[in-house]
Each structure stands twice: as C-alpha cells, then as structure tokens.
Length: 266
Image (cartoon, rainbow, N blue to C red; front, side):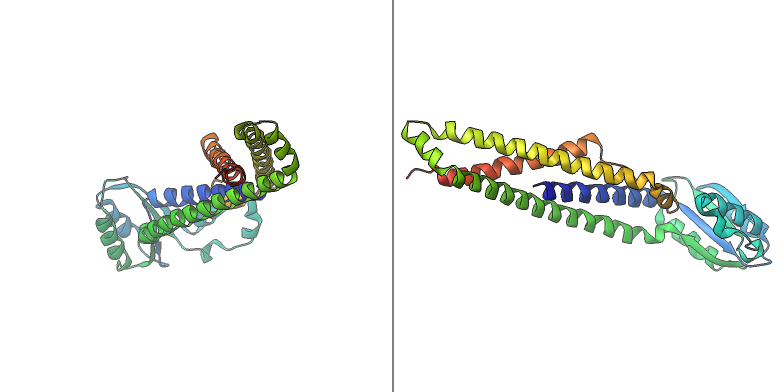
C-alpha cells in the first residue's frame, strides 16, 4: 500500500507542476524579434508601435542581450564569462495585452515581421498553443488512467492483506462464530486494522515525498528549474486530502470484498 500511495502522490506532484507550467506558458503573449546586424531598429519599432494590442516594447542591443542572459541565468553566470557581446543577437521583446487581440491577428503580425527587412527570425510562443493544448489534454487522460490503475492496485493490495489476516485467524474466527459472534462483530476490527494500515502507509508515503522534495530544494534544484521559468510547488492540503480519501476508499473496498466472500452464508 505504501508503494501504491507513494506513486499516486509522486505522479500527482509531477502532473500539477507540469500542468501549471504549461498553463502559465500558454497565457503569455510574447513575441521576440531577432534583428540582423546593421538593421535599423527604429523602422521595426515604429512598425510594432502601430500594431494594436501592444503592451510593451523592449529593445536589447548586443550588450543588453548579454545582461539579459546574465539576469536569466544568474546562478550559472560564470559560463558567460569572456563572451564577446557582439556574438549575441540584438532583439526586440514585445508583450501584448491579454485578451485584447485574437490569435489570428497575432499570427498575422508574426508572419509580417518575419518578412520585414532586417529581421532575422521571430519567436512566437502561441505557435505552440495547439500542441500545448493537446499535451495538456493527453496528460489529463494519462493521469486519469494511471490513477484508475493505482486505485485498482491499492484495492487488490488491501484485499490480499485482509485475506491473509482472515486465513491466519481462521481458527479464532470459527471459535467466535461458534459462541454466537455476529459477522459484523468479527469484521469491524478488520476494517479498523485496514484503516489504520492505510493511515500509516499514507503518512509514510507523504513524509517520504516531502523529504525528497525538500532535498532537491536544499541542493538548489529549484534554481535550475527557474532557468526554464518553472516554479516547483508541493502538493496543497486539498490535493493531499484527495489522495488520502482515495486511499481510504480503496482500503475499505478491499476489506469489504475480501471479508464478504469469507462470511457469506448461502
């Protein structure tokens, strides 16, 4: 049970962080225009200013590009030491107002800027929007399938554990039945044992996951993820409670299935 609950929690932790990152990435309307050497930046900037829905325009020359990189990867700034700024491209970073323009309009701006004289290339994150939506959809499907599989696995584990207890205490149970003990009187302790085992297994699994997460944080793994604009977060109380309720349900169901057949009277 510990293994099944730990896998559930670990998968949910990974899923939540990936989903949050993809959702955040999808909401950003950013376009970066890389310029060729010697390009007249004024013409490009003036054209961009005439575009509807522009929130901000920031120009970065060769030296500014180096400072931009240094700020983005401040924790590993040493790799940029000695780099000639002239080798880095100059670019214009454009931010658009949220929900002010359509995707079709932005795609049209992207195509126009690509053909603009002096523009080397254009990066537009919304070109990946459809792929991101598909990825998020498939992660939901995969997550649902994995959770159903782990739920069934935890029921099977609970079923097998209680079955072993019943077989081990078969003589004791038969004696209790002979002296008039009801099925409920015999089965209730089994449910209590199953619930206690579930609580202990779940507590150990969440504790282990928390220790692993904080170990990565201690060794500055979050700083590495920050380079990719990923903010790793731990599970909140509602998510932990959800997995706990699933674990508890699987334990009760497994105990019920294993004890029902044993105490069934034709």
